[in-house]
Image (cartoon, rainbow, N blue to C red; front, side, top):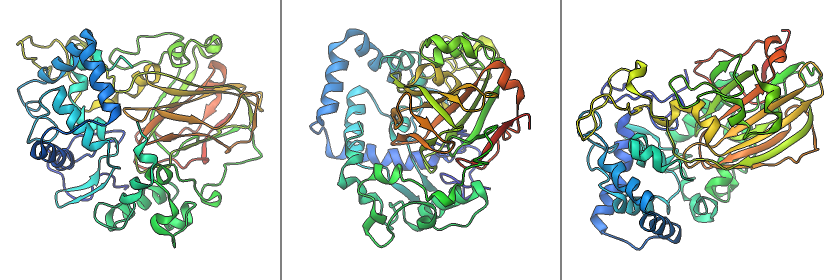
Length: 448
């Protein structure tokens, strides 16, 4: 069993929140400890001058009538009944957008820390997701985040959280969790320096900043390529846990409804080649903040398309209560069942995000004619919208070669195959397994 984000101890039912993507802790008390700490500090020191990017954000909110309305209303629309009557701190609610800006001002100047509190061992890998956890799923929050900075995490000061102290990623529990997740994927017992390229004798293991640590490359021998000479074997593109496997996907579908069916045309940003994948197969898997975050070629072949499609950041679907969802919420006006706020948040909205979020789209013409043209899509989630592609169109890649990486937090990815190929692919990992599937390991094969 892989423990992540505070699952080492018993979590009472009233504090357990199932987070399939593990971007936020399963123990709600971790969020209470983390955000409560920041809110308490903000309220104590009073209003501070905003950093430049948040001044721009404030100007956007205050000088656009529609956006101002949304950012005022999204905090008021959090229902005043359990479990939504308190924000994720359980102590002090973010009261309005000005209070939100002050909390963001504090968070933006800090790298993600490891939390080692007695009832809250774990970490908040995507801090903006914690701040916007419920508000982004209100009707106004949904609308606001359909409108489309990680500079600090690339500066040397951010390496301060890479120590062996209680708030450090190399502290006793943080280091243990990090390696337990990595080793559980392939049943190994590597040390950190045996798994990842680093200098254990240097400060912070040689990482110059937090993002340098986050995008750390592995030691090639730790993740061998599956059957490198057999082009009918598809390798796993990301170190990740299976989320969904869907066949006969439609060229265009209503991805925003309950069930979040894949919509190929929208996933591929209306690429003319989209029709090639109508009726095809989509495999989707997610990466937690503790996972390895570089992408690798699932097949040998030639890069036909490679671009980053701009998209949303915090948009979540709102499912009408008439679709059979249980426990419809009551909004502040008393209208019952109008919308259901997703308690599980953006982590159960991964199908929806494949069509809307910022994403890297890479089409590969596989060397094996039995596979042909296929697609890798790296989807940035929440603030994790920095998708970096490291290959170019026309470039030849071997199975297992690097394609790119995510920066700053956990994300999700898809592989897309055409209809005929999808019917022949066998051996996909079981959706719902606890451990990651190792990157570059066997994912499936033609006619297996």
